[in-house]
Length: 81
Image (cartoon, rainbow, N blue to C red):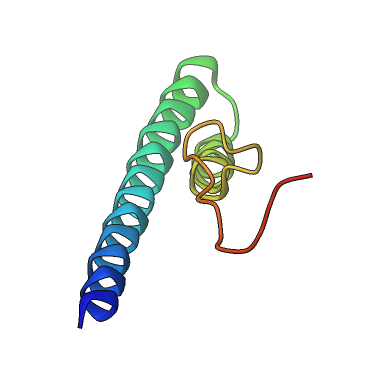
């Protein structure tokens, strides 16, 4: 019974981290989209700047390729090189 309870709490913790990552990714996307739209409105640039900044920023925060924002969780039986 003990191992099943451990897996349940680990699964819940992982689901919570996933939800935080998704929420922060969406918030960064919205904030950068808004910033890009404001910049394009003030400078008279095309309106495409907002969606480009928003989508790219949200993806970078969500994916985090260098694990600067979200630490990589070690997998059992796996050691980093």
